[in-house]
Image 1 (cartoon, rainbow, N blue to C red):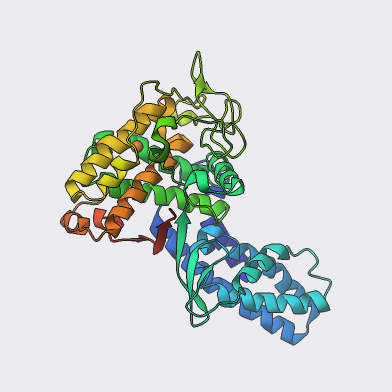
Image 2: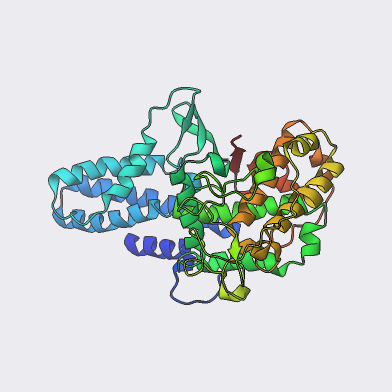
Length: 411
Ligand SMILES: [Cu+2]
């Protein structure tokens, strides 16, 4: 019975997994509700398992063992568990203890996939040194308080400073999310939401631009973290090497053709990318955005703002800062890259779109850190952001974003 309940929950969580191809609704609220239910059901199940072990009945243990796999699956549903790992702490530890006993006493649990559970248990039992910073299993920066990991923040990193493994992890997940049956419906919903909103609203309206893209980054990041909860959206500070922004010869370059780079410029006649993980044949724009290869058409006369320009922004008052970042930083890079990135129909499908918008978000977050008061500006806006059930100010109140997600940018 419990197993059935869990099964229903798993189905609810894994909406994208449903056999039909019908579009699903992508609602943050329903995910929260889902997480809540999983916690309740998991905790119920964990208690049942303990009782079965105590009773010493082989038949009951066998039943519970089957359900235990459901619990492991349940804990491993990243959409439900990823942001609430702390809430699962008790359940994971209790289940792990039970598991030890089962392993010793019974052969009826031989089919259990325990490695997933053990990974969580290992991660959660990291020695928590009071008031010290510590990384959790999802690579978040946490503080240890009263034996618990608190104020955990996702860390977004500069792409050229990430390890090649971290870069490859992001690239693979980015490719997977658009094609894997488990995620592609949500992905389609998210990306077409972008294409469907008139760009005049997102890209030319001060009240919308920064918070809207912040929300949008968060949505894709949440999705990628269902695949691997260590993933965050990288940013690329191209201003640091503005004169050589199009270089791809070094392994750490963004446009490198290795498995941890984005590949280079497109090639005539169609300007399709023909190297790296996003080359024609290995990656394509989805059919619902007219399909075809990923295109890049690097501008030869491109003139990107340099570090001095970006630094100077930090001292501007909000409306000037916002205008500079939107009209100069935002537009210049898109035009330099050209191709799919420079078209409102296709830009969201390119990996460089996300690295670029994370950079913009990082510059905004740093600007806020100077104690400036854009919140005064956003507070007075009474409309909700197009496509989101959120007000602009909800994305402007600091490093904590809707869904109780904390984000930090590593320099
Ligand atoms: Cu853009």
